[in-house]
Image (cartoon, rainbow, N blue to C red; front, side):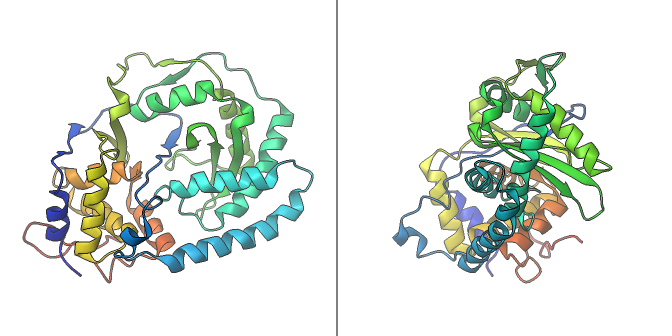
Amino acid sequence: MGSLRGIKAALKIFSLVPYILKEKIKTEVVTLEIYVVLQVPIMGKRKDNEMSNTKINRKQRRTTRARARRDEKAGIGSHKGVPGVRVKARRAFEIIKQASSTSVGTRPGVYGECVKGVAVLAALLQRGIPKPDEPLRYRTLASQQMAPLLAQATLDDVLTVLIHERPDHKWSWDIVIDVGGVIFGSPERHPCESREEAEECALVSLSCIGAPVEAAPGYTPIADPENKLQIRVNGAPYIVKKIRNDPRFDEAIIGAMRIEQITYDGLLARFANLVLVDGVDNHRVALTILANCGWTHVTQKILEDFCVANGVDMDEAPATPATAGPPSRLVH
């Protein structure tokens, strides 16, 4: 497999220079870990003749669709009493798959979780949603961008509530909203101890829907937020320039895929690997590309789960830094 020199050369076909606005934003831990799903057209709106020159993991997509059909058959029958299960679950599944680099986006059997989550949502609504005592406060760019979407949404826009038992037997919760394709839930580093606790946290968090919003004390809202993106690396937030709407960005990504003879998912995995192994300061362009391709978080676990979910073998095709030195391999 070729080196990242090919990728670097491909990225030079456009004159946009990605930048880090702040190398690291010092902020206190927020209550919610937010995934704002980006409507990235990189793989979804290509002409057939354009995509014929790139390697696409068709087998993985077929496997995902087959799994979704199996999950649907297994789950729909047990939730016949809940109206709109199929429609809500499918829409939530579509939103989650667009966030394929997030922890929830790489979980197996996520469609089945969406089906069950519609019933969970109905049960929580029957318990009654508490009224918030204070406005919803934001203190990062991601939550600043998400706040207006939550404010304009209603409980009717909530598609599903996922309650998930993790491999370490801790529990997490995620809420999927149709308005803006928003997913938000429990922080990866702060899971719940039980299913009951996860359901209670989700119930309280549903009160954020439609609530008034304001900046948290001490937080100065980022100017021009529609032209910036936030991405976290091992929990540390960075802000980068939003360049994905420029057509030259798509051309650069396709050019890099052709030069490297690699899939779109494989290309992003290489970029994430470089950022984790060599650091953000050495690969600011890679970080900016990841954010503009929909990544909101980069951790070793997210990268490994992303590779498994999308059939990327990093050990077989390790990323090679543009500078001299041995290839960078996935750190286990």
